[in-house]
Amino acid sequence: MQKQFPTLSGDLIHQSFLTIERPFDDPFIVIGNFPYNISTQILFKVLEWKGYVPVVIGMFQKEVAERAAAKEGSKIYGVLSVLLQYYYDVEFLFAVGNECFTPQPKVQSGVIRLKARETYLPVKSERAFWVLVKTAFNQRRKTLRNGVKSLIPKEILIDEFFDRRAETLSVEEFAALTFKMI
Image 1 (cartoon, rainbow, N blue to C red):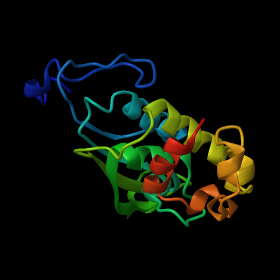
Image 2: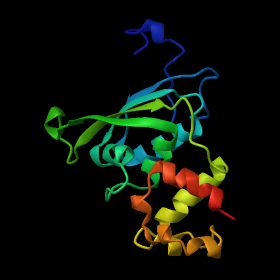
Image 3: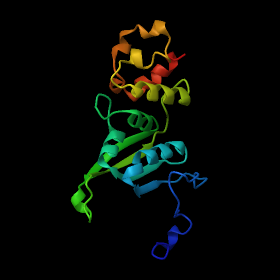
Image 4: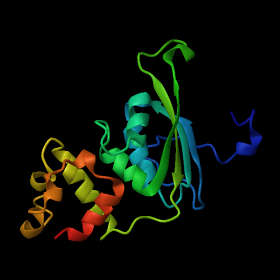
């Protein structure tokens, strides 16, 4: 690869994406056709490096790509959707059919682009935001009242807002809810 693209010398890294430390001190773009069996883990690794990765363009298993870009109200909207969309504008660019590959995989592919947000929504703390989102989706069939009762004071939980389920809340609503946490 370095013989074909000598300008990339020093920029190509041959290590496991999941175990590598942040490879550059300056901001860098992540582009790839990522292994489908670790797609979600790769996106969470990007979140660890969020301050250094302004753009990600990648081909993932279609279901993961769709989940990353899903909006509230969708059955596939979840932890990955909310956390990625807090830090990035996520756009599902296009699907890639399995007939485009030899041999043909059994799964479809999707290409997404993540572009870092210039500013983040106000939250009590990033840790509170992550805990709230993960807790709310941990039991996604429960109402928020039951799902986040360990995080929100009882007197606040009586509000009818908490009759909703996690998948109906926007990223903005999750961010605002952090200020009601204990």
